Length: 459
Image 1 (cartoon, rainbow, N blue to C red):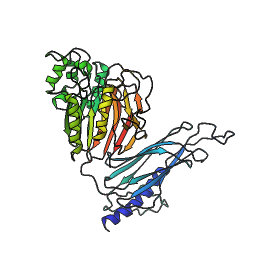
Image 2: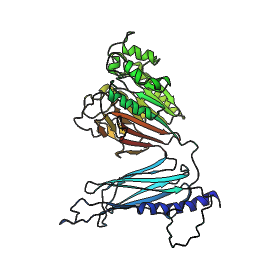
Image 3: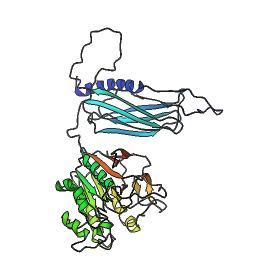
Image 4: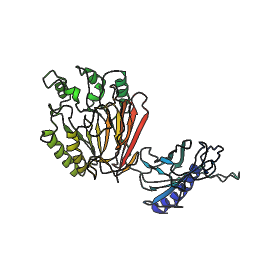
């Protein structure tokens, strides 16, 4: 049997097992009664099932799955929000899907059978929510095993035809399936909250930490140096400078000069490459000390640097870091017009994927957005999905001024902001080494639990 024939046969078996494991999850139901309009009159439970629509597929083919949501009386439920992921055996690659059920209570999604799958356990996790029903968390898994190994022969005849324990295979692995990991936060302070956030960052053992300004709001920066000493000595710390890092000027005793000297920085705006990722660090703390207007050396540098990175075939991701936010919900500090007018159009032109800033002591994450809309009001949302973005083509803007300073409350939520939280913590970013996917989570700096997530997928 050739590889392709074996693969084709194996996938058919996998689909049978997948549908069995998912559909047979225990589901709790309770009695429900209808109101005069035929709608459920109490908060009954959803029943959720999942099965493939095709009997067999081969390598490079798409297989479609249908998720069906019904109420306790087996009637379809429309408008159910579904978020799910199929986690490949390597534990890193995943297929993420989401959407709402239609009037028939169904949501269909497709999965490409590719060679990123390796031997092990393929897990499926689905979160389901509807305000009129109790939430559902559905999960299932099956084992992926090398088909060249003979299956054990069972001579017993107990009449049990359950194939639940039979193992099947998917072959073809990615040579390097690990990730690059980065942590971002700004507005540090120097107290127990700050140390908790920094400690949570270090537990991730990141390749780099990017500190986004206001590294110290007191006169002495030694607290910041002390907290990051181990990462700093390993060359894993990069900084942007904020207002409080620059407000005392540029004489030899100022914090500004101490930071430049300590990190051996010639200019406080700079760029660097980490593998296939290009980082641009802006200096937007104090325009009078380090200008960022259209006539400034910084603007010319950013424009030229992004053009070069965009043209480099070895660059797969471009991430801009800095202090002042470009776009923000109403809170302590608005986005500056000079920044919004000059830079986002460059970000869009040269393919920037992510812009991460601080200054507002809260967490905000935008949808992928254009800097100007058709009516000239801007910004305009490119993709209204809540968490998963396929080839968005425009940046997502994240504010993460949450390292430890006293938090800023919100007065409202801007329509282009997907998620906002008054919460300390940091942005935990993973980029797959096979260049296909960026996964980001905002983590609570004290409990290290996830508070938000989003994914950018490139094909």
